[in-house]
Length: 176
Image 1 (spheres, one colour):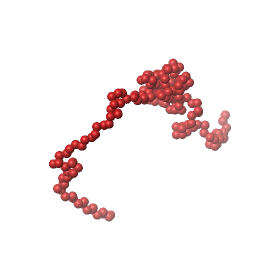
Image 2 (tube, rainbow, N blue to C red; image 1 turned 30 degrees about the horizontal axis):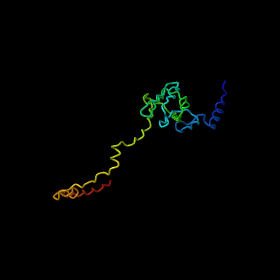
Image 3 (cartoon, rainbow, N blue to C red; image 1 turned 135 degrees about the vertical axis):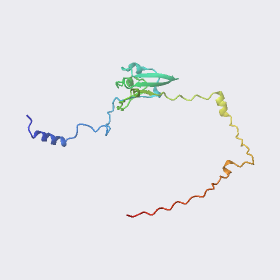
């Protein structure tokens, strides 16, 4: 049987104690150092070995070749179990873990994240392009204007024949 005054003792104890919960999402929490959040792909480090694809236990990674030594990664965040096995197995550190964990989506298509390949390096100019770069541009010749027509800015603008109307006088305020 509960004593009648026991609830007041518990109530007073709870009022002066620190709450057991956090004020999330109003106050963002700081993640620990080795927190395994969303995976980030660093395309400039990728060599296309696809070890990360083979080591992923949930088959959530796909590496695609998009050019000479250029690769993009497709992550299915709905399948990923965030074990970071792919990060540990990558020999060139092309994958890293982040502290991002708020990944819930209503649309499952948003869970397919494509990390674009690094931009292609600019190719050296070809023979024709190199020749055009070394030759000076042709001199710009002024176009002759006929003396009968003045330049467009010098033409007078037609004046309107209507006289401006004066503003009507304001009506006096009526007091009640």
